[in-house]
Image 1 (cartoon, one colour):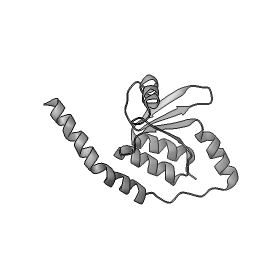
Image 2 (tube, one colour):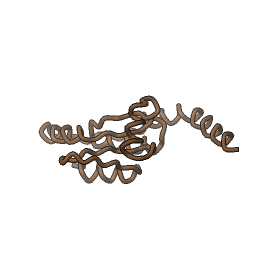
Image 3 (cartoon, helix red, strand yellow):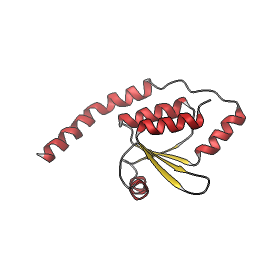
Length: 129
């Protein structure tokens, strides 16, 4: 029974995938504008962030919308297409679950943040104008 359920969700995702990608492209919010100096500081801070995601995950789409709205140049690691990214997520975060934001703090400590609402809250608190 378990393989049948798994197959059902795989087929469902494949059928819905084009619609999800179209929705993600059409529903991008307008990016905020910052002056060059502030944007340079944001760009530097974003070098310490990596978002582990895959394109058709609705929760990843939610986070990527916030990233776009806040005009953040965060590195994206696709765990479906990049086995190294998947391995890094599992080794560092302890589980292969997306979205996951990898935050490298100034002291070198690495934090793995799961849950789209938590990630969006963090990004908003840290980078909102």
